[in-house]
Amino acid sequence: MVRDGREIVSSVVASQIALHAAHGGVVPELAAREHLQAIAPVVDAALRPLAGGWDDLDAVTVTRGPGLVGCLLIGALYAQAVATARRLPICGVSHLAGHVYSAWLAEPVLEPPFLALVVSGGHTECIELVAHGEAVRLASTRDDAAGEAFDKVARLLGLPYPGGPAIQGAAVDGDAGRFPLPRTRLGNAFSFSGLKTAVRYTIRDLPAAELDGHGVPGSAETVSALAASFQHTAVAQLVDGLEDAVERTGAQTIAVVGGVAANAALREAVQRRFAGLRVVVPPLDLCTDNAAMIGAAGWHRLRLRGPDPPGILVDPSLVEFA
Image (cartoon, rainbow, N blue to C red; front, side, top):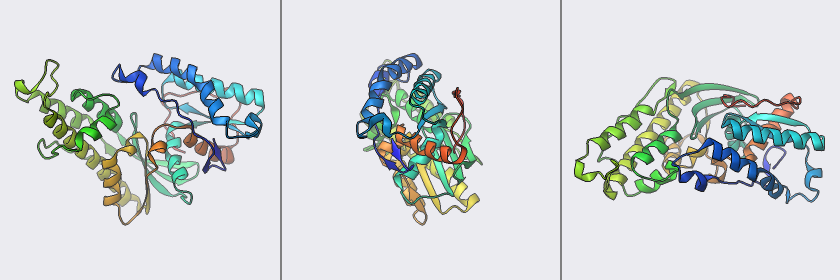
């Protein structure tokens, strides 16, 4: 819950990482089932700081996309039932807009225009928030999202899901120069498919004695070096793409948001490369998916466009940033 679009009153997250880790990635059917079981208890927990409970709410916001259709439907139907029962206005917002507005929650005086690098498991986008309610997409990935590449490379290295934290941990003591990897640079776009393939080929070409029965490097030193090289190259591609956007727009303020923004190497690289600019990177709990960012985005959407009519439709492929 948020107050006035900026103040977080409560933020309760039900993580499914342990559920999906056994499968090496998200299983949509399991995710929807877990979402159904968790949604009411999570909402109840979020309401506890309010003395009046439901009576203290002014409006309801809900994610309508992008995402897994089963989870989106459960959230949208629950939110609309609540709004109808309590006679509250409701609006559906984009998950991507939520990530953009996580920067708003992290920096109380932040105002557009600013650039946002949105990096997560499903998306890698660079956008300019021109004004509240108006965003321009400047660059996006042509293939894998950055977070997806981290997950896939982690699997190649025999590391657990989710791949981002696993690769970051493995890379700490790794020699990033041992396995040089190619850096893809495209105009107005990102690409991580070639980098992921380069890691696969590098592993394939290791001496047979260094691989286990599943084709995974058996040496912890080799895994660390490959993790370090991949992370270094992926971060460089992201920062290079953001720098291109800064040069094109002349932006003085940038934000890095989304789950991959929790990566320490990316956070440090952005602060270093853009030391002369205003840089906003949310705290870790606002990088990963959370309801507070949806509340912040919804506050602005309600203010600008008013509530949605009954029957909010979910859109698993929604691309909207404000």
